Length: 184
Image (tube, rainbow, N blue to C red; front, side, top):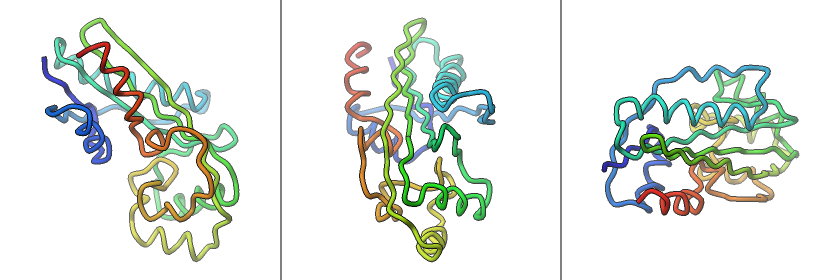
């Protein structure tokens, strides 16, 4: 049995590497359009499940690990920014406030499926426009839900974390370790 990571995220690849010695990376090509009717938890669950389904179709006997992360404030899903202006508005909205980050991980091998959603609450300091623009100048925001990566330059925005830090990074290592015990 091979282990397949259904993600091209370098962070997920690095973190899974702490848990298993060998795996393949096979990104899932899915439609990530946000449906206004979905709650943040429903959306992240749907995305992780879809990724696992798509990749498992090509690897039916192997263990597929898929994950998705979403940022939400006031139940509004903040996906990956579509532009610098979009990223600026997201960060401005979270400035001085709490927001939620949800990561769902799906492990799938054949008909056996295990799924966990791991929430975490993040509080940002109040951010100036200059601070936001300096961060956006790094380009780090471009492929990140909510326009920031907690493990990078945006770490200075974080006043408080309540929950699993690695869920905010996009791959709750401890939870995945526990899930893997059921498969390996």
